[in-house]
Image (cartoon, rainbow, N blue to C red; front, side, top):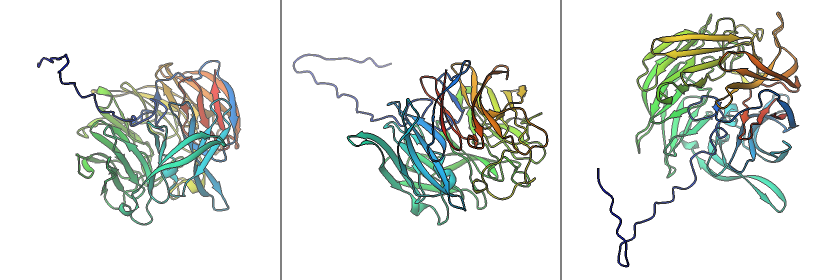
Amino acid sequence: MAAAVLITGAGAAQANPPADPGPPILGPAGTSLMHGDSASTDSTPHPGPGRGARLLASSVPGGACAATFIGSDGMPVSLCTGFVGAGGVAVPSVVLFDPRTAAPLARTELRKGGLLGGVYGYLDGNNRVVVADGSNSILFVAHRHTTSGWQVYVDGRIDVSRHIPSGDAITGLAPDAAGRIWFATTHGVVGLVEGDRTVRTTHVPAGEDLGNGLSVHPGGVSVITTHALYEMWADPGAAPRTVWRQAYDRGSARKPGQLTWGSGTTPTYFGPGGDGWVAIVDNADARPSLIVRESDTGRLVCRMPAFATSGQGTENSPIAWGNSLVIPSTYGYQYPPMAVSGPSVPADAGFVGGSTRIDVSAQGCRRVWENGDRLASLPKLSRADGLIHGLGYGPYVAGSVQQLGPVDYIATDFATGARVETLQVGSAPVDEPLELTGTIAADGTLWQATVGRMLKIGS
C-alpha cells in the first residue's frame, strides 16, 4: 500500500482539485425510471400511502400517463399518450404537474412514433426527461419557470435515425453506469450513444421484435425479444455484442392481456449481489413459466409455473426484493386495440387477476403465496414499508370479460400477500388503470395515472 505525502509551504506544489463530474446520470433514486431502477425491480426506497390512504388530489392531463418521474426539484413530470381520431392515433407528450394540486402546468407534444417510444424513458441528473420521438431522435425534455409561467421544452436532441431502418421505431432506452444511452427498436436494432454522441448498433436475428424495456446492471444489458432473452454488452469504443442468448417458449399466439406475441416481461435483475440473476416469464400456451438465469452466463437457476390459481399470463415485469419475486397476472386484461400487436388466442378472456410471490435459491424456486388481487396497474414495492402499492378491481365475477365499476388503491403485504388497505379512488371506464405505472415520491405519495386522470394518493 503506497503512503500519501502532503507537502505544504510557500513553495509547495498544490494538488490539482478533482475534475467536476457534472450532473449524475440519473435523477433521484426511486423516481427516475419507469421500473424503479436500472435493474427493473419495480421497487422503491420510499414508503407509500399504505394504511389510512386517502386521495389527496387529481387532475385530467389529457392523456394516459405511462410513466411519472420526480426530480430533485420535486416536480412530477410524465410521459403521456393521448389517442385522437377514429383510428386512435397516438399523440405522445411530456406533461409537468403541480406537486401540490396535481394540476397540469405545462406540456410539449412529441412527434408520433412507436407507442412504446412514448412509454419508456428516464429522468437524468438535470431533471430532464430522456425519451425517443417519432423521428428516431433521443430528446432531452426540460422544464423551467418563467415570468409567463411554466414551460416544458426540448433542451437537446440526438438524431439516431440513420442507424434505424425506415418503418422501425425506438421502443425503449436506458443509461448505463458510464453514461452511455442504450436503445432498442421494435424490429431488433440494439444500439448505444457514447458521450461524444457516436452511435453504435447491432441487430438481433430477423423476425425477432421487441416490445419491452431494457434492464441494465454493471457490465450487462438485458434485452428480451419475442423469441429469446439476451445478455448484451459493449466494450469501450465497440458496438453492442451478445454475451449469451437463450430462447424461450413463446407459445402459439399472443395471449389476451399481453401486448405482443412473446414474453410480456421486461427482464428483472435480482439475487446474489443484487444482479446475479435475471428473471422473465415466458408465453407458453397452457401455463407460462418463470425462468431465472445467471446474468453473467445464462445458466438456468430454476424454472417453475409462474402462476397456480391466477390468470395464466403477464405483461408486467417481475417485482424483486432480495431473492424474492412478485409476479402480477394480467391475463385477460383488455388493452386498447391500437396498443396491441396482432390477434390474441383466445380472442378475449376473463380478467381473473392474482399475484404470486416466488422465492429463489441455488436449489430452485418455491412459491410462498398467491392471492386474488386483481391489480390493473404496474405496482410498486416499497422496501421502506414492505407493502406493494397499486390500483385494481374487486373480486372477479365469473363470466365477465372485464370488471368495470370501482377502481381501488390496494396495498398488499409483501411478506404474506394479505391485503392491508383498500380505498376507492375512481370508477371505470373513466379511471381504467390501463396497467400504467405509478411512482412513489420521497414524501410517501403515490402518483398514479389512469386512462383519464392523474391521481395523487397519500396518507
